[in-house]
Amino acid sequence: MTSTTGRPQATARLALVGDRSESVRSHRRVPRLLEALRVRDGLLLDAYWIPTEEAEAAGDTGGVEGFDAVWTVPGSPYRSEAGALAAIRTARERGIPFLGTCAGFQHALLEFARNVCGVAGARHGENEPDAGEDALIVPLACSLVGHEGPLLITPGSLTATVLGATRTVERYHCAFGLDRGRLGELSGRGLVFTGHDPDGEARIAELPGHPFYVATLFQPELAGDGSVPHPLVRAFAAAAVARAGNRRVMHTAW
Image (cartoon, rainbow, N blue to C red):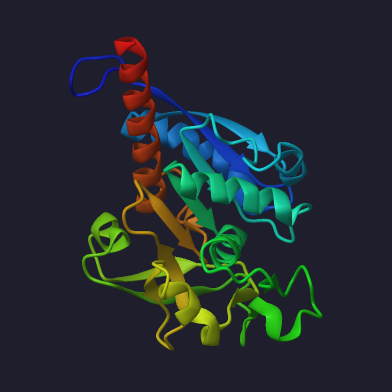
């Protein structure tokens, strides 16, 4: 397959960080999405599953430093919170395209709070039910397991640009989200919340200046039947392929 320049299309190495399970619907969707991205969009991704325990064993980098993109997938509680956070931090600090969905959203906020905001005591309420006031991620007032809901998207944001809209309806499968009272700690240090439900609860986070950094509490991988990738998944894949192409050009130049 070739790009619009006539050169062979680069294949991006994708790290799927999470504890793979056939019981998790979003995990079962991934192979179909990758095939649809290849056939429909000409985006080639070579995906590797990295269990969170392996990410922890890899040390501070989470084992993802050689990848063109990192997707922290649903399926909490992760077997290793530390592994998931290490992988997210590497993607954020090294400009590796990043997508975090559901638990990936929750852990992206946790990583940012600890390592950018300096809130070392920030905790995830599902992982530590007795976290009390230290809980950054808390039970939702109403569980969103198996629900769909409307979202309002900030005009001009990456998500709005990708969707071509400022309103959408998305599918969830989660029971935890950001403590609304802690939002200012994160936004004050540069994380931008660009999607909210009608009650103003944060559902999408972006990091301006990063090649591609989007975290969503909803699960775009569950959109439709999987044969047509959600626009955010497609945009993420395109960013990964672009990075792979740039890396190949740089390598050739050497």
